[in-house]
Image (cartoon, rainbow, N blue to C red; front, top):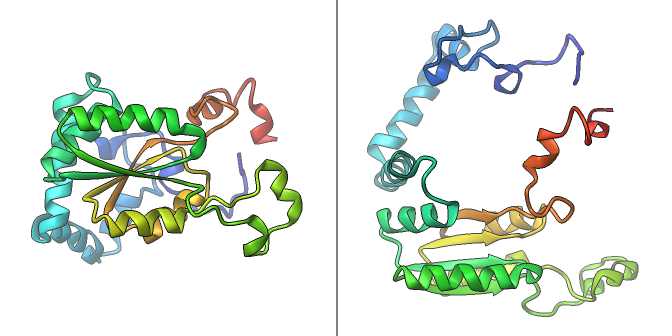
Length: 216
């Protein structure tokens, strides 16, 4: 942990939970308190306006809250995605998948179709573009000759006019490019972690034992 006194502290340094309605007290560096103490709550009011006055943001915020309330600790994430999609009126779902998780993507597609959705998916190697074509070192072809192509994935799903796009195991950074270029709202079903069986939180749970190297 960074113990430098010059570090600007924020929510990631807090364990009080007061803003979540728990009994803890707000710390002196509290982001919420800072917003109000500055005497300028314009940013807070602006965000509330988004939730109440912007039709799309309002629909998404309410649907998200309803899915959480109705399915808390009862439904899996794939089930929650189905419920969320229904609440926002999505009819056509796009899947942006890693080629290494095509089996999982096929299963997800089968579930979504069973729930009544139209599904169109694009794998990351679509287009079969050579790594050297975008200036990558030929040595990288040892992991395969073709680039992951998240921009093409996004553009092909845009062309299909999907209502909600679902990411399944795109690499770090490739997922960022996909989110950047997707016209449709996005959510993630699987976050890639090849070492931990796609459960990246495991490294955080073990940061004081097996994965203490992360803090050294």
